[in-house]
Image (cartoon, rainbow, N blue to C red):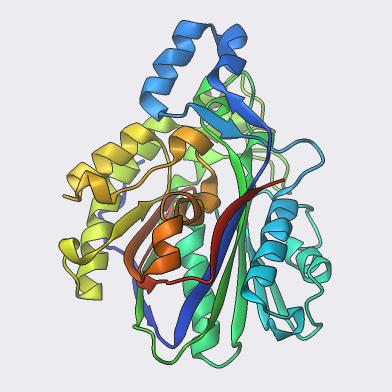
Amino acid sequence: MSSPDFVAGRELHTQSARIAGVVSCVPSQQVDNDHFAERFDASAVRDVVKMIGVNRRRWADAQTSAGDLCRKAGETLLAGLGWQADSIDALIFVSQTPDYRLPGTAFALQADLSLPVACLALDINLGCSGYPQALWLGMNLIQTGAAKRVLLAVGDTISKLVDPADRSTALLFGDAGTMTALEASAGDAPAHFIIGADGRGVRNLIVPAGGFKPYDTTADERMAGKSAECLFMDGGEIFNFTLNAVPKLVARTLEIAGRDKPTYDAFLFHQANLFMLKHLSKKAGLPAERVPTNIGEYGNTSCASIPLLMTTELKNRLKEEALHLGMFGFGVGYSWASAALQVGPLAIVDTIET
C-alpha cells in the first residue's frame, strides 16, 4: 500500500473553549525489560529496545479496564477543579479497548462519575490520533453552545491485545487512561486542527477477530501463524506512512496556526517508538529539546500518549504558565490529527496510579 500523497486533511478552527485541567492514571504494575528476557532471550530484547526505546511500561491487571483508569483520573480531576458533577454537559470516551462491546463505556463513566442524565455520552473508536480529534470535538461542542463543560476520557489497555510471543508489539505497548476538562472561555486564543484519514491502511494495524466481520487472515501471508485475536502490526508500512505524512502535517499545522516554530514551547507527538520520533522531529525541522518523550517509562500508550506527556513532562510548567503547544497523533486507520493551541496555566495537571 502506498502512503497518501499527502493532503493534510480537514483544516478546522475553534474558539471560546479552553483546557482547564488534565489528569492521567497509569496502572501500578511496572513491567521492565527483564520480564521478556526468558521468552525472547536478552540479546533479542536489547535489539528491539534499541529501536523502540521502551525501558519499562505499565500494564493493567485482568480486572482493570481503560474505563477504570479514566474513571479514577476523572474523580481526581473533578475534585482538583472543584467542579460539581451536575455541571458537566458532555463526556466523550475515546478508546480502542472499551469495557464492553455494548453498551458504550461513556455510559458507564457517566454513571460512575454521577454525571447528570442530560449529559451527552459518546464513545469514539480511535487510537493513536484520538486526542487531538477529541479536543476538536469537545471544543466544537462548546463553540456551538451545545455544552459549557466537557470531559474527554481518552485511554487504552493495549497490553490486553498483544500476543506475548510477538516481540514487536509485546515490548512496545503500555496502558494508561486520561481525563481532560474543557470549559467555555471567551478570552482564550483560537485553537487550530487538522484531521485526516486514509482507510487503505486498515490491514496494517488491526485486530482481525473479535468484531462481527472476521478478517480472512489466511489470505494475508504476513499473518501466517499469528493469532487473529491479537494485535497485528506491519511495522514497515506504519513507519513509511508516518515518515511521509507527519512532517507535512506538522508544517501545514504551523502554517494554518500562523505561528513559527520558535514560538512553540513544545511539540507533543504520539509516542509511537523512539526511533520514529527522532526521525520525525528531525525531518520536520523541530528542535529536539522541544520534543519531549516519555516512551522510555510508559511505552506506547495509544490514544493516551499525548495527554500523558502533558502530565509527566510538562506538569510543572503547565501549572504555572501558558504554553503554546503543537500536538500530533497518527497511526491506526490510517488516521492522523493535529492541534495547535495555548494551554495553561492549569488548576490541576497530574499523573496518578491505580
